[in-house]
Image (tube, rainbow, N blue to C red; front, side, top):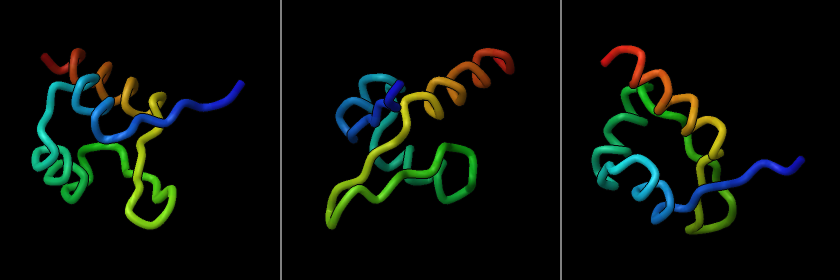
Length: 60
């Protein structure tokens, strides 16, 4: 089974967060880290993002 990678657009749709909010959360260690796919291209593992979203629901 291959792991799906979310690009910035998909990540925004999945989380409802802006690019700056995601960057702020990443810097503070409160969001899954991005993967450097190539020069100028990054992505996030869907599995990591889904786990993060699930953890947010628990604390709500």
